[in-house]
Image (cartoon, rainbow, N blue to C red; front, side, top):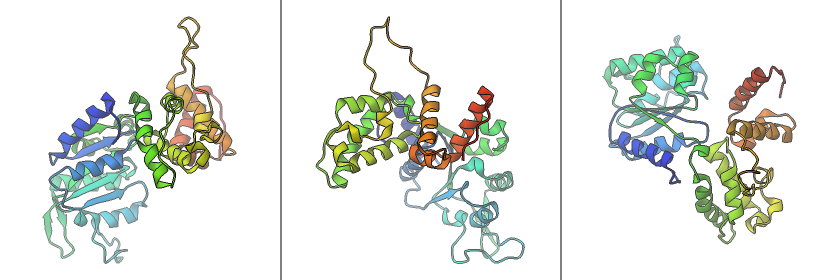
Length: 316
């Protein structure tokens, strides 16, 4: 993970320490902060690196299918959906099981997972049991405090999963990491797209550091890819820079007595999201794709803004 800010360095130091243990790790951070990448790094830096890293996206699979794929249960007398593929628990034995979006797992499946962790044994296809030897890493883009309060995450399960809790800081909280990432990544992207490597000019780096990046590093990388794909942008012609870098000019430093008051991040984020929705003719999904955010994140923020303002607006 690129960057040298104290917030990132502190988190990575804790991640390295977590990799050296076998304890469960719980990752939480906004969409695009690098939870998947960090889970892979923890696995690669652990004593289980030679074993499988099995990735389970709990938010992308229907509950009944997820149940079968984790445990291999046929359910209600039905044959397994994928009879030739071992269930996730079996595949992860001796390695790492990474459960992404764990807060979107149903409470029923959370209860089953809790029972497994307490028992420490899994059922084999031949009916016998064997000790569960996989290391667990879980992740969510929801604050655990919020998930617990809203009843989306069992407290007893969280206590077992979060022996090593790691909060990935958003890009806006990482000092000048955004421009540092851009400066390192952009020349490589140009080469990959067939352009001569070039450095980004200081005015663009300053602009990058001034933006809130609600989609975090994922959004920044998508913007850099779009810039690198444009020959004019690669040559530094501002007319072809992505919309995120053109929406506002980089502010000039003004005397303290005349400098306009800075807007809060919440105001900047709100404007960026609403402008993206407007550019995409009211489509939340297309705005989410542009900003590298989950559509559910935008809907949640819209609902919060509506409640704050007492305005009931609908977006497709």
